[in-house]
Amino acid sequence: MDNLIDYADFKKDIANGFSELISEFDLELILIRNGLYILRGKNCILKFTFDRGDVFCEFKKTSDDIHTLGYGVFPVLKFLHSAVKINISYDPGLQLLEYAKVISEHLKNVLNGDFSWLNEFLNSESELNKIMGYILENLSYHHPISKKMRSGDESWKQDFQKYIQENNIELS
Image (cartoon, rainbow, N blue to C red; front, top):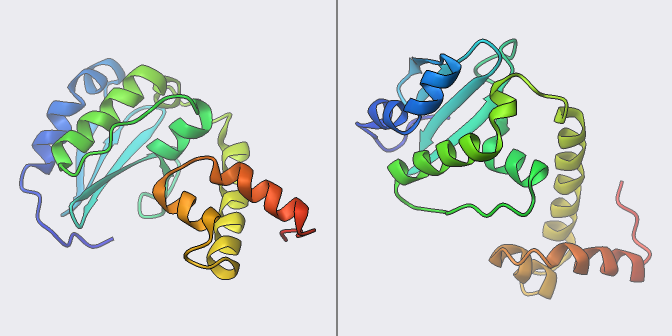
């Protein structure tokens, strides 16, 4: 991912926002290239990218290629702790603080190297991609399920399950 908007304080904001986790897990902050930093620990890597005003934070195994996609912190949080709410901000510094908060409060096990959830998570993500692909290809932009999905109304999932059952649709 290319760094399309400069974030001069990216390194400093990662170091400050994650200072407690850096200390607790003996993480090392490393610049890979402009717009891409990692916090490398003994059991886990946190990968940070910045693009178009948004910060992305992903978990990676220490054996993973740093340039491939990781496992997004917020999708992992939603998978492991579906009831936890996140605060979405358009400010990159606040985005980093939210990542640090949810990791500190709910996902320290991953920093300790617990990837026991990974296969189930990947299956769930694959299934979600199939569903979203179906919706985007087969339902109009104005379909109630599409509208709910775009607005963040989680009830679209139940509506979609009802829709495919009523219409005898099997996703492949």
